[in-house]
Image 1 (cartoon, rainbow, N blue to C red):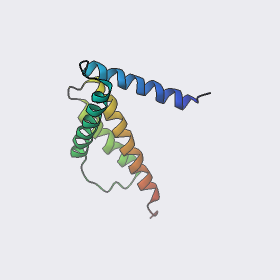
Image 2: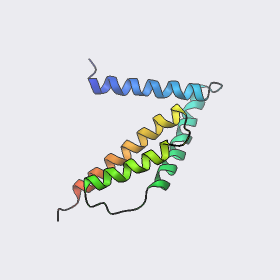
Image 3: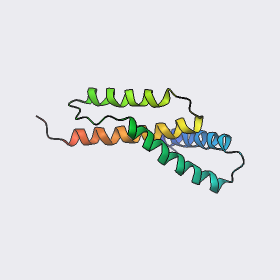
Image 4: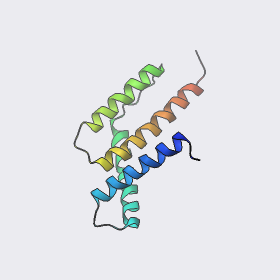
Length: 107
């Protein structure tokens, strides 16, 4: 029996795939997978371009920095598929930075 997290992940993936099909109705499943990869790279680059390099000294500073970046990116016109993919990338990068911050020696 799937856990709540697994059910949520499956639902999120289904919604993202539906949004991709709406965005590219003329493409086959294989072509949509390729387009998703292209979008993922493009969105990752866009989000990275908005991130000002900083040495955040606290988790609060880090969260504020990532929130500002997200709101800046999402405030422009985006398709549903772009938002789904952007959320995945954003949260992955946030978790990665939080882990890196937690691994730093405490002052």
